[in-house]
Image (cartoon, rainbow, N blue to C red; front, top):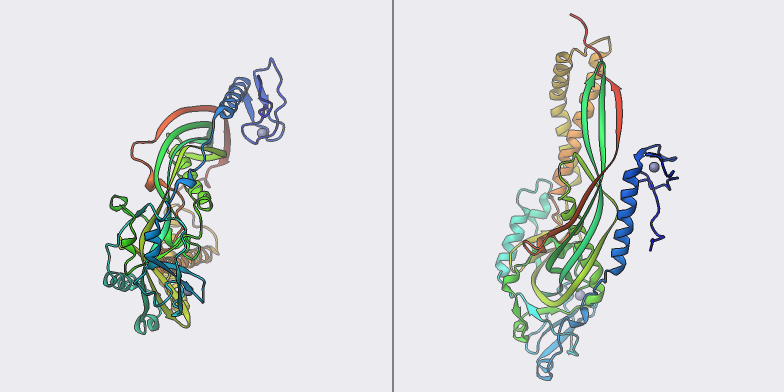
Length: 449
Ligand SMILES: [Zn+2]
Ligand SMILES: [Zn+2]
């Protein structure tokens, strides 16, 4: 049975194609590209087959309900929760540990209450790094930061160093993914006084399966996701079954993003990795681009509730709090430092001024070699070009120095959590679409000497 959702469309621009049976070529009325009828028929049949196969495919849901366990009466009695009256954080600890101040906002008024449940974590990664390690890591983070304000470094006191277990949902999944890419092979050659560029355009379909293990998504609203993703990865070989004994003398945030709400972030990271893995198999072309929406389906999806160790360091500069996180297992530190804007512009100006004469002489020399010198205002033109290059240089140096001040970046994919050897390509098909040819005159002909 024919699927009505698929019809003849132009593989180049997506416009409907008026298809004439019996002809061996068809031309798109919108973009003017010409295709072999055979190619269009092949693509059409494949699209139909894939749409039919997709209808058969079932997608599994994440088993979010299975994450976490219930607490026993005894365990519940041995725990208490502290509420922060200022920011509303709720931190869990054992019955004998006092929370003296809030990990998030530093508020010293923490109100104890009976712990009333929520889920019990399945697993925990114990702390490997000490408070001393955390302070040393922050000191080291300041090193080599050219734009760090002198006053920040000199007057800097770490206001608080807190140890906390952060709730995480760990996602395991088996995935089936498919995507279509547009690939180009480019050939350039000279013909008489013209340069000819021929682009051979292909449509490349890829399908594959893969497994991911324990993609972490932070389960705390108060904990910035980007920060948490910046101190990844955790070494999961040290995961232990959770017992309340780990909370003796330590605070744990309790999740307020439930497993279901964490799903979109896990899906997003999986999709990013799946497309990248498929794209990496489109080889032998000069340019490859994703085309349309990829399909990513879960064949199984398990979720575990785990606690991960984090050191939180806070410091204050010009009345603004600065927070740094350190992975309590690996020691990786993430944070953003303030920077001296005046200093950054001095570097911008300095680099531009110093590099200007260098650019000028290099460009002048190059033009002379290529025999491009002509006319009166020539040195003026070279000067303007050199000035532009110098300003770009200064801008680049300033951006580089500013970038150095922060290492907080969101994780775009889940490639680190791909199960080794699990990626298998299940289908690949490259279809030649058309060739586009561009001609332009060669650079100014040389003067005869
Ligand atoms: Zn078209
Ligand atoms: Zn607070």
